[in-house]
Length: 274
Length: 296
Ligand SMILES: Nc1ncnc2c1ncn2[C@@H]1O[C@H](COP(=O)(O)OP(=O)(O)OP(=O)(O)O)[C@@H](O)[C@H]1O
Ligand SMILES: [Mg+2]
Image (cartoon, rainbow over all chains, first blue to last red; front, side, top):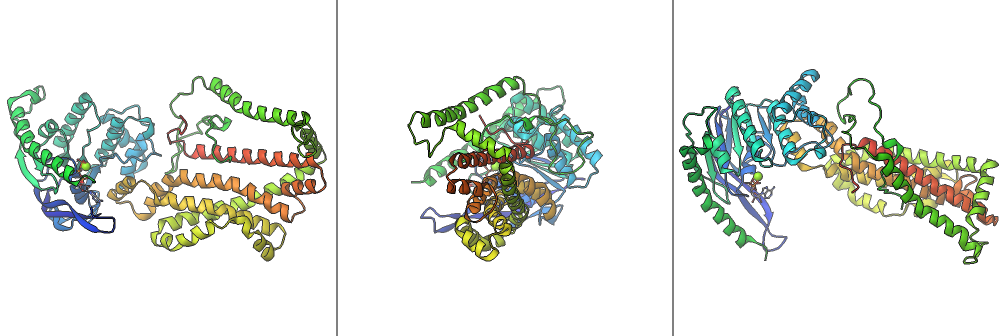
């Protein structure tokens, strides 16, 4: 099972307090007419300057919020709310502090009505997959940031959705763990054919993982360009990251982003409180 | 005063022997024994115990010496040893036991009722935003009306019997529990709510699996506050019109100029309050073992 995604002119504005005093209400445009099509089974990486609306876009697709204008189609049907066909790895982990790592992974499985015994086994399996075997009984406060993030990833994967929405899931990891989880994610993706929308700040990560990389503009977020990535033959024993194709793609996205990041900084300076 | 003791190391804190079989129920999962980091515990335990008793021993020494040295009038503040002797006397002739029992029954019944009423009501009010908005001005008003100021009203309506005493304790205890529970429900981490929503949790499950366990710590804060309030208010109530109870004992002793007995009653109340609080702290710790330790 897999699903295609289509953003059609998606705009999202938030009501915010205006700069001219607390009373004044203004609209803040986080996303501005975003158009993006993701084919079923595709892996798309999403990059863009901080605050450009990446998490907002994921929220909309997850059904946690509704667009101000435009629509989001999932398998050609408009998204009206959350559903078991999508699963999000939140930027803030969102672990239940009163549940162990195991309990947190099971939490997702409870909601799809898996019998208890299977839940436990599946949770253990996926914790092992993210390298947390032996940490099942730890509470979140006893785990490092990267470990928490991995629990959140295990929870999303174990849930087995058609569409995987990941918001900087590897941000808190060391380089080695990150690379091994990247490979694991790619393996899972190839095996299951899930559709993945993957937000990252890492250009290399985007190039390495994404079949295509969508670059967003700084505020308001718009799709600036979608770059197809072709790294040639993805044989396992090859160091893809040092290939010339990789460098070329990396540079291309880096240039696209550079302009946006500097523009974002400019905007931030202007908007800074007086 | 005695609401928050950062002190670790109650005997009850030791991990219980894992009761046979895995936990059967859903949330909140009875946590298994945490990973071992309890080496050197007895030594630390002894040290903290020593540190804490030093201050109290010093106070008692001062209490003993000051009246004897004539620093204070020993008619009004007899040395601690005399108070201790008076306490022993009260204990032997059964007065202490009967009065303590009377007080404890009243405060525990009032406190228990407050928990039984305050927690569910608070959960309900916190859950329904509209209800909370509607009631909050009223709650603020009542909360800020000192319970003891209403004592005459209670006596007027309910007489001076047990009912009015239990009612005033109940009344005073219900506010901290209610208000803490309401705010607990309303301040649940929004990311957890987002997670629950993304998993399509139906409202009842959301309540049971997220709101309830997330509220436990704040609810306990309210319960602990209510614990000390229950004793405070009761003693005051017993001083007004009662034929038994520690408040009565204190008041009557003062009236009969049995000053050491009066102090014996006061000390008993302090110790009771302390024990009650420690009990609640231990209980709280049992239910929130998943939390990061608060102390340094
Ligand atoms: N609930 C909200 N109310 C008002 N403004 C909001 C709200 N949520 C997000 N925003 C604004 O929308 C913009 C986009 O936020 P979003 O979290 O989507 O950014 P992001 O691209 O994920 O950033 P980062 O890379 O730092 O995570 C930000 O400028 C933020 O201030
Ligand atoms: Mg974000």
